[in-house]
Amino acid sequence: MSLSLIKHGPNAGLPHLNEQKRSASFYEFWPVWVLYIPVVFYWLWLAIRYRGFGLPLAANPNVFLAGMLGESKIDLLASAGETAQAHILPFVSFVVEPDGVPGNANTIKAQALLDRAGLTYPLVAKPDEGCRGAGVQIVASESELERYVRAFPVGEKLMLQRLSQHKAEAGVFYVRMPNENQGKVVSITLKYRATVTGDGKRTVAELVEADRRACKLRDLYRERLGDTWRSVPQRGEEVPLVFAGSHCRGAIFKDGCEYITQALSDKIDALMQDFPAFYYGRLDIKFDNLSDFMAGRTFDVIELNGASSEQTHIWDSKTPVLVVVKTLLLQYKTLFIIGADLRDKGAVVPSLLTLIKVWWRDITSKTTYPHTH
Image 1 (cartoon, rainbow, N blue to C red):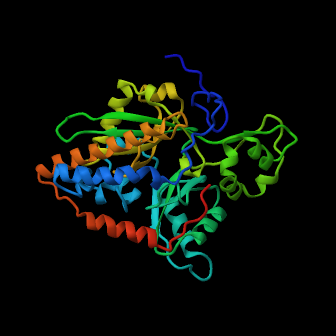
Image 2 (cartoon, helix red, strand yellow):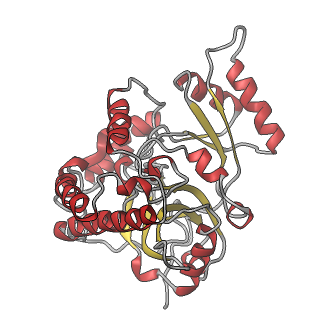
Image 3 (cartoon, rainbow, N blue to C red):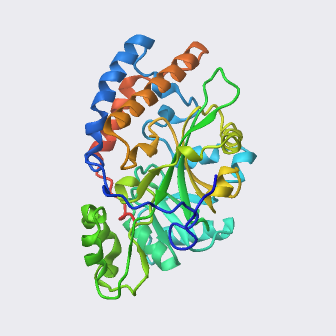
């Protein structure tokens, strides 16, 4: 396969984005719950068919609720063996306590942890239990770290991770059935950082307004960019509008399933089997260039997500809405099949009531994280 890859800029290593007449699908920015209405009814049907409402919550037995809600990013990554750890970007974590006086005791504690781990700036700061890109920022100095920590909720666990040197990013979805010795990659999503290119005349705000897709997220980008919003980039200068590789935070998702190779699937399977009893989820990965990645080489693991993961290639603007719904339904059928198989092998199935309690805790929580970058 001959690939034409972007050589420079925020999306280096990814294929060139083809301009399309339709820059966003009509459903792309609907509230997520709308597309999950069919999933709720299908869950009820599957629960009757497989004799268990909570079976998806047993799909990854060593993860809290299989990663449907409330899982710890830190605990999940820390459970990896040597094979997986070789690809996971190193990190430290701590619980944020009330500020010390004088100074910020949390920043002092964080800096000591970083020094001990040999981690230097820039770093990626994020909540342990955050989802959909909430609270993700780059911190480039101790002063920026202190500002981030001061805005972080007391009593919550914070994660500081080495910033990958790779620009390209993908979501890689993995499934292994409990009765099979080998799993496989079933979906790849290429994640593009939204950008505008300067003409030496217009401000970033005006460039965003002129972009058919970016203008739909102007409020999100304005909040993130601060003073850059009113600046005038030089002609040809590419200005990234977002850092976090999350669709709801403004990243552009493209279907990369055509780039799944046996070599990549084998490499990911070896890595995933190094997590104890993990059968279903998505890796967020940074890599140098798509060609090497397809060969299973040169990549960093940022995060691992469990049962609530989506095959995020569905958020490609070219994906028909019926295909989106069909894919989501198939995902939950797979979860029920895995959960039923593990139940029959003796796994404990959490109650649906536990899931509802955690979900209610999350939606009623007053926890607010620093702004996402």
